[in-house]
Length: 531
Image (cartoon, rainbow, N blue to C red; front, side, top):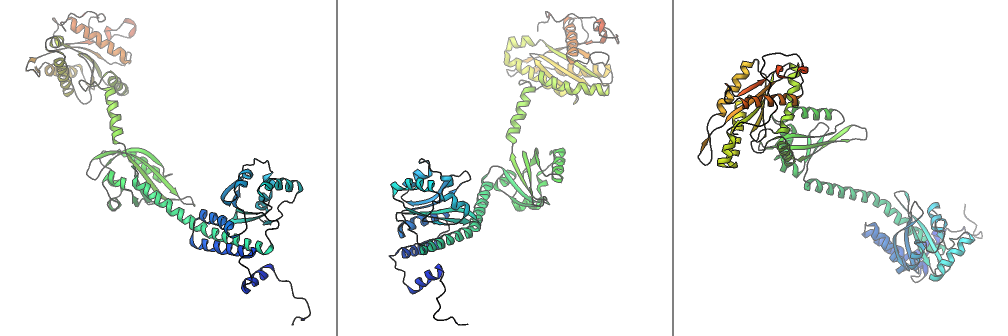
């Protein structure tokens, strides 16, 4: 049905009036509307040529000052604690210094900015709805001659994100048509920011991947990435430098190719158990390089889980700790070994006793503790010097070590005193044969570096372990020491170089007497030997 030509025309929406003016070209470029339209066009061009958030916001504020009568443009965000964070600004920013820092005491948390932030509805010209606030804000604005403002909410990722705040010196500076233009500008900026979210996320992801790749390639630790079936997907350059294998080679051979005959099978079992369970492993194992050399590898295995909770990948991080392991082994060696002869020292002897004595007790085995003192050693030191004496001690140490069996142990306690642990003999006759062999080897001539030939002899005290008396090693050692004193005291009359301390030589309250008896000897005192 046609409309009566005499009836009034229906009211036109603000947007229809605005766009009809634009289409008819009646918008004066020097008018307030024309200036805001120019502002909108400039912002659109900026958005077409940048994907940088800070550049867009800075341009938004700067163009508002350049294209419109606005004296202060500000993009801010209301933080959770009610404070205001500036993202960009332009124009008369002196007002912001007093406003943001709250030196004026204005109730910012209940002002127009917070109101717009909470309600997400733009405010123009009349932001102060309560009389006390109106007076406070107007008093603060008066020195800057800012008489009207526009506050428009901006969105990003479908959430409130920031506020565009514009200040003018004229009252009612934002008529309805200019308000519509500002709302369209903010809407386009918000849409652009929405579009940039995914772009920025992809860019950040790519940057993170690039950074991660660079870090993995340049790091000192070797890195291996496998899938859940332990198929190798990636190795970094440090892995190749450490092992000698490229990705193609180790993918073909498998990581088990790094293992060898000296790799501890218990550690390998721990790794398999970890991979079959939670996937975490942290430990050290011996690996083999491509050229066959060994290195100590501190290996950490970290599983990567899917959202379903299943393991999708494993990351292995390995570090060559051979130097640290060698230094630690060297330190442990020096702590338990004599520097001159390389034999065990007192600490090494006690460590060995801690293993040997319980084993003998469990299996009811045999054990002889022997203390050796070298005869005629002091004259060598006095005549030829300490270097010659050290050479003699090294030779004697090598001879003792090479003559004893694998199950036996020799240590140097200091000076020319040595201690032997002889284990597993079946009779005193068998022990005696070994002691005779030691005497023959030690009595052989020793050639000094000066060309001189010297020789030493042995004096030895022996005590035997028996379950019938104290298993305390210090007691057994003291018994052997007493027997040594007896051997040295009777050196001219003895038929053999050792004396055996038997259970009958103990004090009366030490247990029942057993075995052949020898005369009790006093504690060590003065030594009649020329040594």
